[in-house]
Length: 489
Figure 1 (cartoon, rainbow, N blue to C red):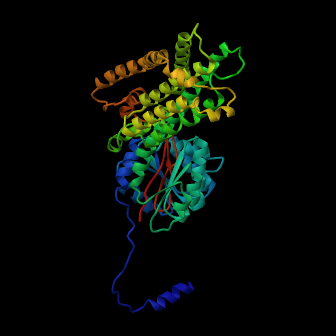
Figure 2: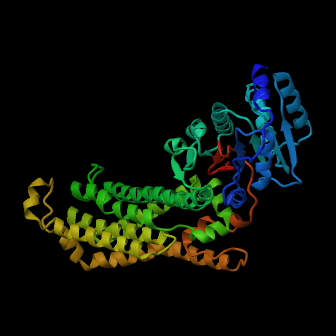
Figure 3: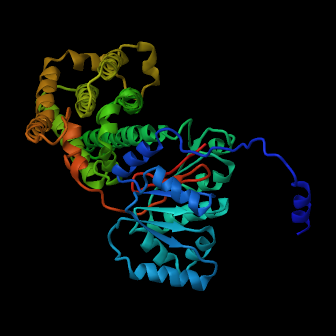
């Protein structure tokens, strides 16, 4: 009252000359980004410190919902009111499916909705909404909401924020994305990724997220493949050495084979190779991202397929090479040299065949690995000054194995039999895919096999998640269901 009296005394007989204000608006491209993310099956939540009217207006301007969307409000100040409001909404909202409605929650209600008593019903109600907007929430409440949804729904979450009040939320989410803006660099320093504008989130998630998912999946599958392949060769060799546990090669060859001749080249190729379409193709078809959320490629079934292929290749290489050496005067190291030479070639060709795109870098990597690896084997037994370090005398054994015509005949037979089944499947799948005009062109076996047309046509099944960010907050969900929201400056 005292301040009001002073203001009345001072603000008297004044002439208004002008007024200033701060414009709070969405960044460029926010509606388009959110539209693409929703098309990819990502669910967007907004956690903001703004008042309710501002938050609702942001929802309309960012096209998170339309004018005909049913807005549900929870604005309560105690537990009893919150329980009653939640029960009324649950009674009028069938669960199990998403309705054309959005949930608007006040900061005071959040504390009660996240209590043990109401948490389950609150999350069930959120799963029936297209989006959820939490108004007047504190930085602590933002982090609690993210952690609660992450733990209760067992989903991966991604948070987006641009201010110091988003730091807690960014740290609680599985992945934090900070926006470098006018509110300082605290959010950027606490995040996993930093972007300059909110519109860059579209490329970060839909393009790089999709490519990275495929790269890592292929990387893991290939490493399982090549290690099981070589283990299969060693396993079957035990039947010929009295199960002594020895290798068909000198131990130094065994170590360097997996360390130098089947790993570095694949790392370079996986890092530089482009997967599953170009940037423009993926942005034009956001539903491509759904393949990662649904684990259509990286799953137990495909892991078993790669492991079975590794066993098949290992059995094929060992059986053909051992049969060709049967009843011949072939030493252990000479036999192992030919076996290693064929295995190295098959592993690198398998990597080339698996790649969705044949590029100059990829071909150069494979050729360099083959040339360097075979040159290493050839010279290994010819460096006399190194023999004293070996457990066995490799005196020209590998050079002799590579000079033997039967080794090259075995290489040709094994290569044909190893990759003929895969190439036949590729031809059949490509033919079937090309006959469907609704499906975009597929350029490789990997894309054909693991990404069917349902990626572009099937509706995404809802799996609630955490979400998004506004000028002060946000959280997005990653591979499963996500969230993100409005950054404004």
